[in-house]
Length: 273
Image 1 (spheres, rainbow, N blue to C red):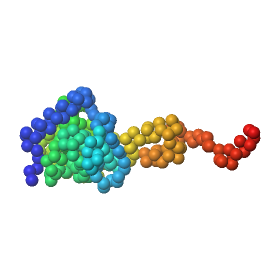
Image 2 (cartoon, rainbow, N blue to C red):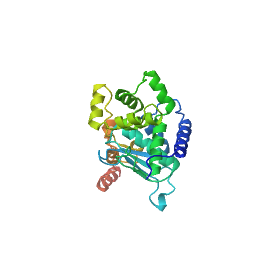
Image 3 (cartoon, one colour):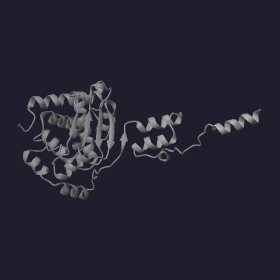
Image 4 (cartoon, rainbow, N blue to C red):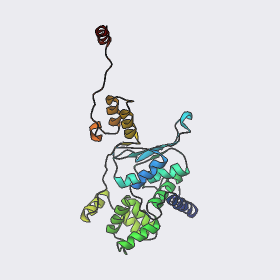
């Protein structure tokens, strides 16, 4: 299996990323965690801590004949992984939604792509092009006066664009800012070493946030409770799926009117005679 994309495939993905940056009006912007809001336009997003060793996420376009016409696919993002990895996973899944309309599971070794299928390599390259636009990358390097790329610069740029360290190393190589030897040297750094450098240079550690988001379930549940469509107990259950409690949203159990029993009705009727 060939290791990388050919020139035609790379140019195709570049054009796709430029097109979507234009559609999203983000051609002069660093995307970062905005990617979750962008993904939310095109999919119903579930964020949940599935575990550090679980897949980074998955997309469900359709699972049966009955739901093949779903208005939006479902995308799950694993919040047990560092936030930069979540960002990259979200952009990766956007490629599959926009250009393949096919289900996808993102493995935890997503960035080790030598043995990956071509469509996965395209999705990775799209995510890199979309999240780290070459013009924006050059602009940030000029702003922070980065003329020679050392590991501090890699970490600084990864922090600015909210992407994984490995993704930034590969992007710097793709855009010609580092050569083959530098790429291999940077990629050879262990996770432990990278975290030590992050602490040394006072960059964020990019840790997991373990947040739980079930699309707009929380808002819909509160609205349903406020208009009397569901009970407080049902509200508690639904918000529990989102890792929330009613009190955290300023909602306390209100007194609920109950219909009188048959015996109470008989007494009322007797008193009225």
